[in-house]
Every structure is written in C-alpha cells, then in structure tokens.
Image (cartoon, rainbow, N blue to C red; front, side):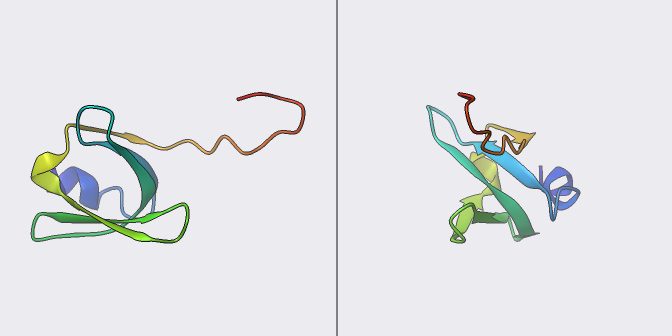
Length: 69
C-alpha cells in the first residue's frame, strides 16, 4: 500500500477506512506506515496505512452554477 501511495504524492485522493469513513485530500507524504493528507480545508490528516480499506484518485467536481452535482 505504501508504494502505491508514494506514487500518488501531490495528487488528490479519497481514502476509505471502512464503514462510511472517507477522507479526501492531497497526498503530502507517506512515511513509517503513516499517510499525511492535506484536506480541502487546509488541515493535515494522518492515517495509518494498515487501516486503509480502499482508495481512489479524487475528481474535482468544481461548482457549476445552475447544476446539482
């Protein structure tokens, strides 16, 4: 998992840690089994890589006036 995450440094991802717990942010680093994300609010989120159930590259669905996303 760490090798996959290291390949995603600088990209936005969605991380699923099981039962409706999902984190979104930009991958900053992966060291010693800990993923560091910078979320959309600018806060750092630290996630244990062994707790990650699934991840996907995030998509930016920018706000479009008049459309419901």
